[in-house]
Length: 364
Image (cartoon, rainbow, N blue to C red; front, side, top):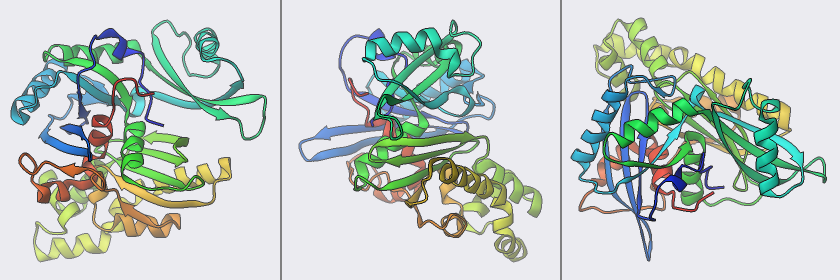
């Protein structure tokens, strides 16, 4: 599955020019430009800049002018000339739900969902809501039913992203979902067998996305409002550091005195425990609800994946081998524009942007 091309946005714009991925997070913007060559995909351009706190709140642009200014700045710094943007929703701004419905054609299904969506989605009315769906295939439990993945968001949220991009002189061509963008990154970079189930854990600054994937299909997704910033704030409070010092300590294990470094190592798991506990709860819920006890391994992505020791901690807690995702495992680098050592350092933090940049016109 390539992710959901949400809300038919791509139909609003003419042409089939190359697109660029723009990961709009709560703490940064990341621009990713990927070329498709005869020998495979190549990362041609990568740029990231910080985003002021409060510009994005709960996955929604709260300061649209500031977001537009940041988008203009990242395009200026990167030198990117593409105009078509692929970005994504996350957290509370988007609803993702799998349902089982009677077998029918796609056109009939769209009419049914439009007329009866309030049965399946947490909205009193669909008047101010846009939706899309993906038919996943026949239900495992009933041959007369098919599994359908529904994705929905309020139109005013979609419009806020569209306006911010448009005011920067660009076009919002595809609006994806963080969870599915990372799935696209995974499918491009990793080999997997048909029966392999893996869990992708994307730890952003303020939101963590969980996605259990099997044979190119999402079996289970969940977002929750804890991320890397919550760990940084715990370290900041526990060691009386500034936020910046705590962020450095979280990733490098140093940045303060020998005493604070020692205290950090002793209390690392305690600082990260609320986040790890919520991840563990999500995986346990999947196992108990879907009978999916045989998860092969877990991949960690997002900036929060760089937290010292978190992969080992989750390996123990989940009883699943856990490793950091490599978004460039099968994607080449244009070393004229890209510093390989820098890309190696940021690694998992680029996962959403890479997944967005891999999207092409006509994907579904």
